[in-house]
Length: 439
Image 1: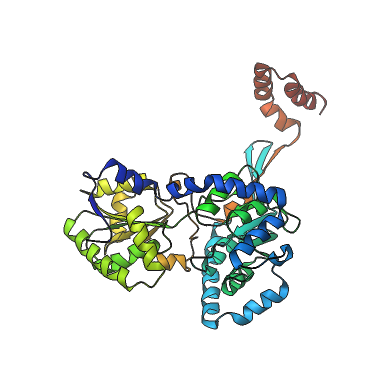
Image 2: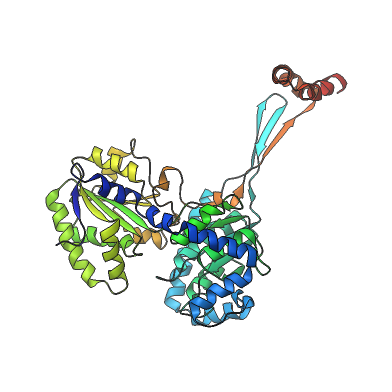
């Protein structure tokens, strides 16, 4: 029996379709009550609550002050990191920084009409708390993707939190170095909902931040949603996912490995393949069975679990039907696997609206590790509402208004007075009229 179920879209049951479309949101809802308890515990007990949770993770009593990464810890990380990995990190930072600098908006002023001017400033947020997950794997690439846009935006205080590495109260050396090279200047060993709560409410050791960003599992994801009235949060970035459209022009083993690219992230991840050919779906399914057997643990177990939960192969009748499904699914990563990917995209471009990033016959991993666009993307269908992490997450854009002299005021006076009188605000009207009378 194939590992990944294959469905025809017109024949799939309502329950199966709902499960595939909702994917990781189901896992998030299951942990919400526990996350609320964690947030309240950190809010009330601060560093003690964080240290207590760390103690359970590393198997010894952790003192609160141990959560702080010291200068000597950073120096040790640079000595421990493999030089090949360090070169890869530097290359990735170069590309990601180049892309995000292109995103950076500029302040501007314009002449609205004679004597009336308006503009917009671009000002960085004062502090950012960036979460770098760890556990199922270590993610120096995520450190780059979260830190670079904050650095490019000009955030003066960039704080990193990441869970303990290898049962020690330390951050993975490559992750620590990647964050430091990308512009971070403050580091803490703390994970999941505890870290998000510390960022939002602050503790004796961790000053609160203005914006929280970074992906994570269900606990982190739920915590970010729960503190968004306290701090600004970035995109809802939870368990990884991919939606692939394959037209049968590429070798099925290529498509199979693209499918596993996101499925191997964890048991709560998801991968969905759309194709119009039953035979091609069967060929990819066969390749997937072979490929899964080649995966080491725990990746193989992760894939087997999400195969039973949120991943699937779906046969559609047409490209139009595929586009409709894409928009409903709103994937984090959308991959068009075709020799003619650009042509396929042109055919759907006017109708395709909901996706985090689009890969045109390009492995998702190439974007994960440094093409340039951010790999911190909306998951769980939130690509309907959000784009990926960018410099905008770390910027404010207040406006400027100026009416120059009586001449400018006269041009707008009748409008101000008429609307102020209609809405019943006499001081609004008089504040403009007095400047014209006595100006």
